[in-house]
Image (cartoon, rainbow, N blue to C red; front, side, top):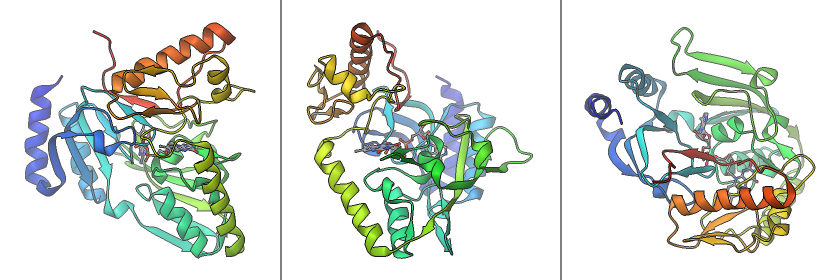
Length: 311
Ligand SMILES: Cc1cc2nc3c(=O)[nH]c(=O)nc-3n(C[C@H](O)[C@H](O)[C@H](O)COP(=O)(O)OP(=O)(O)OC[C@H]3O[C@@H](n4cnc5c(N)ncnc54)[C@H](O)[C@@H]3O)c2cc1C
């Protein structure tokens, strides 16, 4: 761990943006699994100016960094994150609507986005209802459900290059983002700041009904009462990951406080006292079991942050 760099970065950030920085901040409340240790430095950038200050510290002290949205597609290790955890704030929570286009900041929640679309009778965002994340992360991983995904509606994004000052802000069109199944070609150190979405003029009653149907469907199929990170694994080509897990006999399997949901086998739930390591081990067990029974290697959809080495 780069203790000297962390301490110097903390001094600088506490001087320049005192109310926005916390040292050794526990992260369990900042992710939907409700697990994980502290961030050495946790900081919120409410403006581009503040983002420049934070990125200056990351670069000058050569620190690891993690962009955090709502932490709903993330497993943070029990030892936490030895570096800077950065969240986007106020200036990145704006939505503007012009005809059938929306421009929204990366920190806007998908729920707020869908509600705004409904208010303006714009169709195309009902599929995000019940996905508890932010727009920036949803674009970064091409989130989707019900055969729809972010790539259907994203026309353009503005990104921020951490390592390159000239230019810092880069506009990428749809093709340049390189969307794939739950993936993009964006590097993990590209921050998405804003996205332009193109929707279809619709009828608000119809959109509302579609949103309600999607929400009902989720409540029926998913264990929403327990902490989780949604689907753990991507669906391998031609297969549903949940079905493979179920057919391999893993439904209900436990490691410590982590359990494969009895309601949806592609969800791992925290039954109350799970550690990040319990969840990590359960993921490895499921992968090994499915591989040995079907020959298929499941790939995680969720991302990991921090150290998961076994002692
Ligand atoms: C109950 C439940 C249901 C879910 N259902 C779905 C579903 O139907 N479909 C689906 O796709 N997902 C689903 N998810 C997973 C998750 O909600 C989505 O992937 C969501 O888009 C993640 O957003 P977040 O803000 O929580 O991202 P985080 O978990 O905070 O971050 C995820 C990744 O994105 C990166 N990131 C965050 N912000 C930015 C940014 N501004 N720029 C670049 N990278 C960034 C992070 O560094 C991290 O690598 C579900 C999760 C839960 C808990």
